[in-house]
Image 1 (cartoon, rainbow, N blue to C red):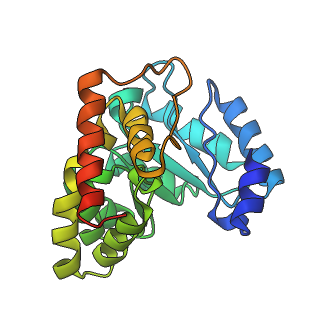
Image 2 (cartoon, helix red, strand yellow; image 1 turned 90 degrees about the horizontal axis):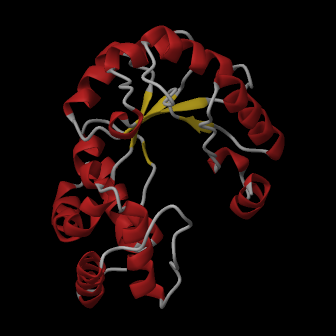
Amino acid sequence: MVETAVEAAGDGARVMPGVSAYGSAEARSWAEQAAEAGAGSVLLLPPNVYRADEAAVRAHYAEAARAGLPVVAYNNPYDTRVDLTPALLAQLHEAGDIVAVKEFTGDVRRAWEIAERAPGLDLLIGADDVLLELAVAGAVGWIAGFPNALPGSCTALYRAAVAGDLDTAVPLYRKLHPLLRWDSRTEFVQAIKASQDVVADGSGGPCRPPRTPLSPQDEATVRALTGKLLADGLD
């Protein structure tokens, strides 16, 4: 799969496979496989089978970094129960074990503290519904969900936001936000696929188990939101 992505992208530097695994040795092995396939970096959650302490988190990222690819930390304490705080991220960055963080907490105040504690650490937007806030705070990338359904308008939003063009970004963000908020819900994958179904006539398709379909009410909501955006000329 990674080899296919690298070939399709035409530039492995833009391919970042996830290598989160049950244990650190497996994560390192997957990172090594990603390097062999031509990927430019990897995305890694902290240990999450149990609630890891900071020593375990540091050891985990150090092991994965030995594969030789740049490692992007993924901070999602809601699902992992392990919070990569700005202070801990600074330690990981100072050790040379991470180059960036996908920040998913939704707490935009962290962007400023991360910049203070680890000035060289790249901040990546990790949730669609805080795109504008994190872009203004200095984010340099977006690991995105809904551009899979509405690539044109989402790309325009991102470019305007990181350029500081608020006259363009704010009205567009306001229109998109009711849909973007679904990226922070448990059913975000199903919602994105439902939106794709509306845009491209069934291109999203069903999710792999154990994800179950959206409830009829939620699916109707996502479809209506997407349809309204299309009617307003967004793509």
